[in-house]
Amino acid sequence: MDEKAPAEGHLALADGQQYEVSDWEKAAAAVLRKAGRLGADDPDSAAWDALTRPTLDGIGVPPLGTAALVAGLPDPGVPGAAPYTRGRTLSRPEDGWDVRAAFADPDPGATAKAAVTDLENGATSLWLQVGPTGLPHEDLATALDGVLLDLAPVVLETDGDAVPAAEAFAAVIAERGVTPAEGTNLGADPIGAAVRRGRVPEGVEHVVTRVAELAREARTLAVVVDGTAVHDLGASDAQELGYTLAVGIVYLRVLEGAGIDATEAAPLLEFRYAATDEQFPTIAKLRAARRLWARVLELCDVDREVRGQRQHAVTSRPMMSKYDPWVNMLRTCVASFAAGVGGADAVTVLPFDAPLGLPDAFSRRIARNTSSLLVSESHVAKVTDPAGGAFGVEKLTDDLARAGWAELGAIEESGGVLAALADGSLTGRIEQVAAERHVQIAKRTRPLTGLTEFPHLHETLPERRPYADGSLVVHPYGHAFERLRDEPVADRVFLATMGTVAAHTARATFAGNLFAAGGVDVVPAGKTEGVDDVLASYAGQRVVCLAGPDKAYDAWGAELVTALREAGAAWVIIAGISTGSITETVDDSCAMGVDALDFLHRTREKLA
Image 1 (tube, rainbow, N blue to C red):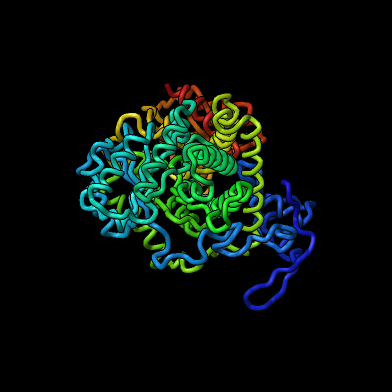
Image 2 (cartoon, rainbow, N blue to C red):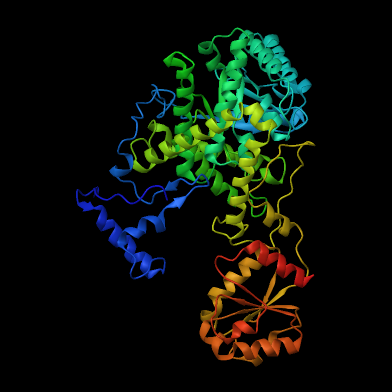
């Protein structure tokens, strides 16, 4: 922890009562001691460390915001003015934020039908994946049939050379003779496209210069700086910030080299960031991104009026799971809330079934309605920067801004983002973060509901049409558990429950969920009173897991293990941690904090 507990200060409640921070520490510490998370001799102030959640950047998210957290922090200003921390514009549009629907279907007819449906039912702009991973650029006119380009902004994304798609779209605009809606973007991002493919970017100057030329003629935006390219590979928030700043700087330099002044070039760029279900870091990341980009443009002598960063937030792809996909609705709802509160100009909620294939009409409806409910019924967008002034958010914004700037410094020390990608230093740092996240997920200290926690082993997944060949490269956070679920084992574990249901249910439920997370089913014995009861339910399973209270383990656990081995058990596990003699008779154990992946691999080997 970099920050310790505030030494002084008070808390004001809505009823006007005043409390000292020490009062909160005392109350919180009392609860933590009851839960066994603090010892009797630990000071009350230890509650801060116990409840502060560190991010993968090593930044602590405090459990409570106090004035002491923001003492000495720079002034965030006001919305619509430098440093733009609090928003690119002074006020939000009446319709909240731009509800941007995503499309990756290679079928132009299906895309056209879905686009019109989305626009008629709440979406306000379109985001088209063009190229081998989506729609052929030759079919853009067909896919946009029925779309009023002067009313609905269209943003392109290509996985390679953006010039053919930009030229095709510019031709559609010219043929219709309309002025494209504000926010329309030809979507050049040659660096991001190369990052997704694990390649070193090539032809950056040619692509950006040509697309910018087309954009100025068509009166659209030209470039998307896509931070999700590294987020999808496992990058942290600070790494995503540093990367987007570095890429934005490259594109500004290219445009200046093409004769476009930085003040004219800056408004041609839009930035795309991932919004996750960690709502406070997401809110802070978007606020920090605007502050950092404004600082970059200040150093480039760009006019203050155009230093505001245009942002498109997308609900995180890697946070989603293909198993129990319905939980993705909850993840994307929290993420879109955070994106809106964080001040994103446009928000894309990816459909909950996106990890399974091309979304269907129902999931697209749920996705667009998520924003509609937040804007029209929850009124989240009524206030610009609703989190502004919140001590915890302001502190987290400053911490992320500093960490993002440090990442930009590391990239620039390598010679810029192109050099950092070529020498592997940037991807190396991302891999370190991804490895740490993997450890936390394996130990289930970073739980994934429906996958590592409370898995539904016998679910029937909805069927979806596959994506085009070579779809976007995404490293799902729970990929290791998903691989286990992809190959469930036929044999089951015998769950030797000991004692009454009330006595064994806690450990039996824990063990059953843990096994299910690895594609392993269990056969519970049910209520038992002794060895004979357990053996009566035993049917010769090779792997057995004892689940009961410590009292039962001590009383007849060792006897039960011996009897089970004589009956055919080859591998005996105990649920929980016991210090009794039974620990010498078992082969393995499972408890909170265990490396679940290692444990599941061991168990599956014994079942094979």
